[in-house]
Length: 148
Image 1: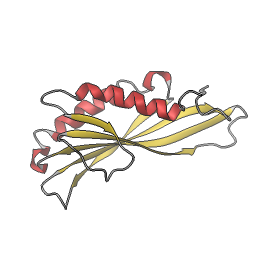
Image 2: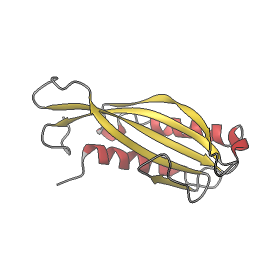
Image 3: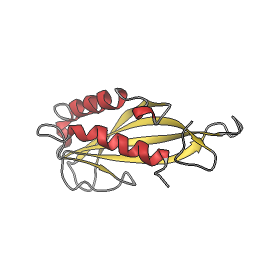
Image 4: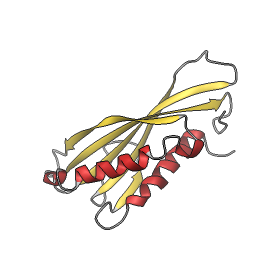
């Protein structure tokens, strides 16, 4: 059995954002399962593909339309870097994500929902921002790897 569409979407996002791993941008882009995961190096980006919901269960007999949130957690060592580093990184992430809105045909679309800055109270002055997207795709009934 091939990977589910959702897993393929996560891999595509990770591959697209991997272009940001270079001097002056990010040192790591990793897929994680939750927002609380610690970053091993900084600046870094964690890709969190969250749970999904069916948008219209009675839409048709062939399959389902599914939606899910993608949180992109960008962390920097010094939260004071926000004006110099973080805003530039957020803009680069937006260009990449919004330049492939159908994620190579895997998704119907992916939409920007905004970003929310944070400071890690335990490891001050580490901080960053969480950029959130909403994705949607269609899958066949009984076949999570089959799109239509």
